[in-house]
Image (cartoon, rainbow, N blue to C red; front, side, top):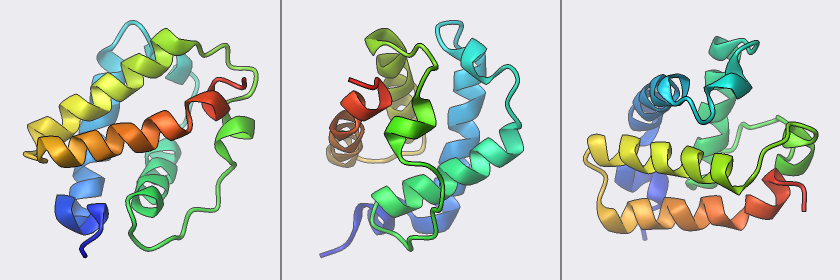
Length: 118
């Protein structure tokens, strides 16, 4: 059985998706302020490694876990939902199937409580 990572197009697709995703994030007034003082090159690199890992690709992610990585940021459900919406829109734009977008949403949902520190 192929992994989600393989189905969406592997490294090239994840790289492109993260670049488009962060363009959407930075244009989204609901959440862009969380990224104002962030090194976006480093952030995108970490996100590419993280998504590669959670989508079933090679695991080279060495960043923080979701709970400690988002602690104290004041993120609530509306912010989390905005991120998931932007990710789904990015994947749809890249031609990822609805089934695979649904799988991505399930992965995101599985970390909601950790990201929101509850």
